[in-house]
Image (tube, rainbow, N blue to C red; front, side, top):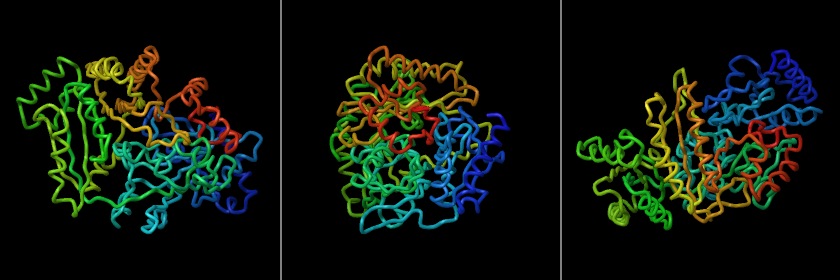
Length: 499
């Protein structure tokens, strides 16, 4: 947007807000200095950089209400997007020419934005709060949420606007299945409390709703007694069918507490099993040369002081049921908090920062053999090409039970009772993402050509027809909820669903 246009828009916003006494007394809420505009046009993906007119730093939910009402009152409203930790990878939390709300400002200098209720076994958490802080405060009193993301330096409102998935989802469902109440500010500037019985259209719409119907400012999250420690195994497989059969065995009962799978595309990714054994290193190298990829399962069993005496026996019993490569079992023990926060804080890189052209898919179980042949074994090894210098990735592949997802929510998954996710978590130089985009598009084209009914998670979709296909039978419900809660298309414009 041209600088003069930015100035005009900011003037319109400020003039509109002066009609609201509390907003008029706080002109610093919206800023357009270089640091603010950089914040509002940057995310973890480092690919899209849409410049907003300004960034709002609210000190209360009321500030957000008034901002959205100011937009809604205009004949041509300005866009508003909520930014949590900025971990979108395609600019989904940006508002080109509009206002980005820095949700972190809601919690600055305040206590009580995470409140643990041990009697009700829930936590009331501000939408701007990070899951790692929920973990620390809950674990300190012996409780914890039951469903996580692999990376916990993400905002509560951000993950709940998508789904929030990790290896616990097979038994507890995604994070959106473990929320009982929300406070939401709609696209009309209405502050509403909602649940499955109170304003249910908003509740089910916002959970997995990609920010289209409202901004989450509080979530009531289900808690359970926290374990103190975990037993953690990493197993290597050479055969895809054995790998998936064992994963599905693990998610068919509650004997384990976390299950994920990984695609091993090079020797570095196999270091857990080969770093201390030259013979295993040679065996893995030969297998990778022969078939391109190997597979691994990571599973965890929780325990505490009461079950410490039996955990080794129970864990060994589980291991004996699995058909991994003989000797390729790396087992460790860790505290529960260490395990949940195993990745640490990855957001402290120094410039030049890389790009993250990620692709996340849900694949129905009936398609995984063809998907493996065409994509996992057929395409992922190509990323070892020396031409893709400084490009690397982590490739996660594991199953879910569909009955742990609530179909009333906006999040979209395949229709089959068991489905898998592929998280292709690419890292590339800042200017090197285009070659990975081409690779990702090849994957999508393969799925389309073979009639594989995959769904994108954290979708990067541009055309309305593609969004209609993505939502499928939910499209009419999505349209209805948009008309109810954001009729002027103010919220989250960068998703490009209605814009």
